[in-house]
Length: 564
Image (tube, one colour):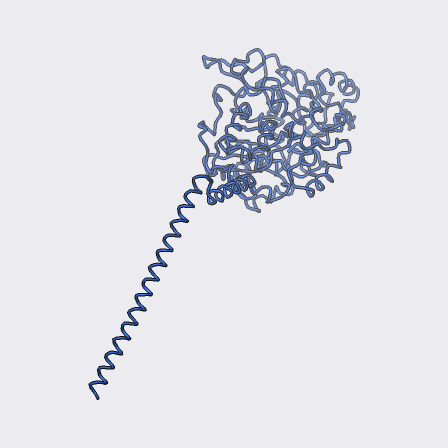
């Protein structure tokens, strides 16, 4: 029984194993068939994909193309992706800190041998008083011309009275800005000057008030002022700014230079603080740039320019513009196209970078209230992070004697700008002109005046150019606007900006010199670009260049907003 049971169990196990084997084999055959099927399908798909690729662009390529187009659109909206401004200077290799051929020229303002001395020509019964007008630099032009007017009238000049009632409301008198003793002493051979009107014959003589027209010629003074002065003995000329002709004979122009560049010296306190500011800039770096930045709301409103600030800007500047009732309706595009819009702080920075000044350069900025505040000035600071002003390099205690007086603060900026290695301006106001002339007289130091007419158009379209193309065009447009000798035709523009009668040129032998004039313009001078200079002159003699309908006397108020 046990044997039979054992045989049955063995047979059962054998059948069970056979069934399991059949199941395993069946599974394996099914898996192999499935794998084969998958391989076949995959091969067909790959073949179809390959055939499709031969005759049509791939979907992936289309996606990549669309992505590229989108990126290009983004770059066109954000100019810093395609208009990439380098941190350093470019490949424009020149000496950034000096003018070419400047060693061949120098200031010369000594009186000629036939120039009559004060003690021989001054009439003891004639006294000339003047009341200046405007800010520091506008008043400076009045003081210069007052000395020449006194010489023309054979009169004693009383130390000029400064303007205390204009826009700046500065109460400083002459002796608080300028060294009075030096002024009187230095000019003693040219004009007799006294501090106050003396009694005549034991009696005080009240001066008779006269106002002469702007740009009054020597003949005009002879006809309008001299007869009154002879009768009244003392005459006061009021609102004395731009009241003397720009073009005078060489001896009188040289007298202007002696007053401007030698006799008018700031007080010791102003001079000392100004020199301290310069020294602190020089400690930081061997060279530095000074920028006179005019971007105040008043100036922008008067200019009629638009800077992209939307309705807020139009409304704010439009309200200020109503102060001048005789202004035309503003046409911002036309004004900018004609080069009459001051460059923005960012545009000044881009111009300097294109001229090869890198981000490491020290920048001293002389400015008033900037329209738009920090947001407006931020792009310039990003381009030139070594950004300084008198407020950043002097303490509040050091500036305390000056801070309440706009003319004294302006005088500090004047000194730093005059002593800087490179001077830049974004405007053509009185301070810019006077400093440009001073720097020419004192060695043709680099003075960059924007060729605004051409640069404004370039700035408007800069997003469509590469940086290299933009920089190249800036350098081309600035030829003739960099403070080089002979950039301006002798006699052109305001004399304060272009004192050609007081610039002498050495001859080839190096020992003899002669003043610049029309007869000795060299071939080099004739090749200069003169035409754009007229477009940049914004002064009292070119009323038609301003968007104004006003008389010459009404223009006096306007000049105040361009003076400092």
